[in-house]
Length: 427
Image (cartoon, rainbow, N blue to C red; front, side, top):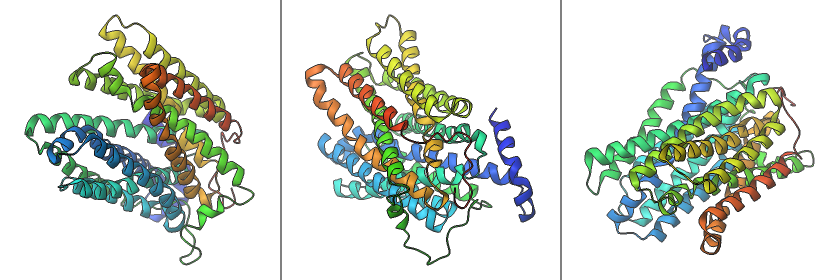
């Protein structure tokens, strides 16, 4: 099915690009590979820190509070990086900036292995966060302009699904490295592996060109696209898309952030059991990402996205309040949770890329996605305060439902863009 998708979407590129030395089909496949691998490898590197955090705190004699501060610094940096990265992609080209950011987060992840104290950790994780945040809007802008309008939903969802693959790979790498090396410095070897994405993207990038040409050098301020988002013709769209992303990210964070803790405290699972449940959730997430794209192309952006939010609410409530009589039932429920929350994220690339014109597509995607993510990061803090009074499960569900509802309302203020052509100069 994935193979046929690549063949269908690349056909239209044959005539225009075949004479340039690489066929449209080969060019399209490389763009898909670069965008998906960039996001998947981003997930591989970024999720390492959470997995290794306990060992890092023990080795460097740091408190949990310091660990949380380092994580927050990385997330704040990722929001800034996402806004800047998208604007730079509009100015200097999608492919060039994609290579910059993948090499950047790879090197920063590897340098984390050298950290000797909290200050060094903050420095390397902040740099990693800047590049991590920039990768998604750059990859979305690049791939959306190659994808055919009638199948853009599933193409972008396929890219989004790569994060699950990267997350699973880092989980497996964590298990293998800690099992093979042991000792207090095993986490350092794990972060050294974070350098691999730089080599992969440099190989994949060869021969790829942007579908749309960036403006002439010196034509504008590199970050001018961010200001353009608040001109009269785009202001309402920018604000609506940002609120939409606040809810979409917040719904996701309300579950993912606390799921391991919930499994440990409410379900009494040990580390091995929690890891297995997390892998089942990741598998469900991969299927949710990929499948959502087909529904977006068939039924449209707004109806499908609304349905995925309803699916996530129902599955989360079922997971939290269904009495679990067996391990198999527990796996089935957490699989549905992973599938539902990822299906609600699978359409984000298509929805956002179709809201903004080519000249500011990177800036628009980067700003709305990352400002939304930054505001949504307060959701877990709210759950933490509520949990002491109302219980963790109830707090997760209430915040998740509230943010999914907010996102749905904002979604219906955006235009329906199913089948929209987006590669024109004034689209």
